Amino acid sequence: MKLPTMALRVRDLHVSLAGQEVLHGVDMSFVAGRWTSIVGPNGAGKSTLLKALAGLLPTTGRIFLFDQELTAMNRQQRAQQLSWLGQNESASDDLRVWDVVMLGRIPHQAWLAAPTAIDHAVVETALRATQVWDWRERSLGQLSGGERQRVLLARAMAVQAQVMLMDEPLANLDPPHQVDWLEQVRCLTAQNTTVISVLHEVGMALHADDMVVMQAGCVTHQGACTDAATHRAVEAVFQGRIAIHALAGQWVSVPKLSAL
Image (cartoon, rainbow, N blue to C red; front, side):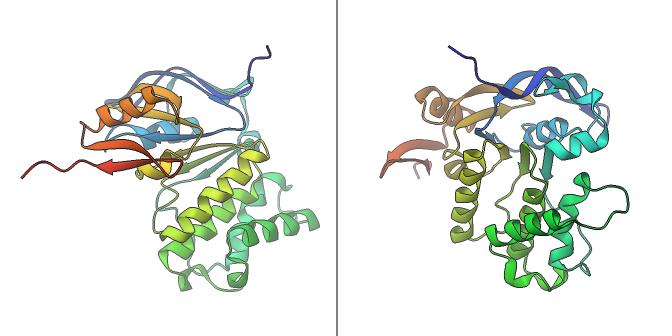
């Protein structure tokens, strides 16, 4: 049997911030072409792990992007293969939506080169996929928080990277657009894109293929979202304050209220 391709592999990863160790010897792998959600309580190290995978933090240990060590790749190679959507991403409010999304094409362009026909086609596809095409001439400052988030998602998609890292991508999105995001992730994985996302919404995270459960800077569990062991790990890390049940063919997270 052929072994699955690993998009990212992490070996003995440590991260310290302000002199305090935040990640403690993390070892894990992410299968290519699958969506992995990362969950855990506040302060578990979820966002720190994602930033480390993106090469945005100083680390000790080793991170491999497919078969190449991340530290051995130059900035352009890394930017072409890893796209990033972080929390509270900044962009100039004066920029047109079209220009914001075109920024995602920079890793594929020569220095100071004008966008090509391919760049324009990719940007249009991303704008239409995230349903922001009609705003392409508007400035970012004219948009609501949810609208802005969809534009930044389009920018990340325009990179056409093999691996997409997203930290709280559902922030400011209303329920219909959260569903649109889920559908877009499924389109990406169908094209063999690897998606890794940090989510606070456990119910949404359960729609992923795989789940990483974190607590206190360590990975306590990694497994398929359909596995009972994964459900038990999620319930445990949230101190039994949620329960995972099957409902209408899906797994849902239900809060467990303390008896009054």
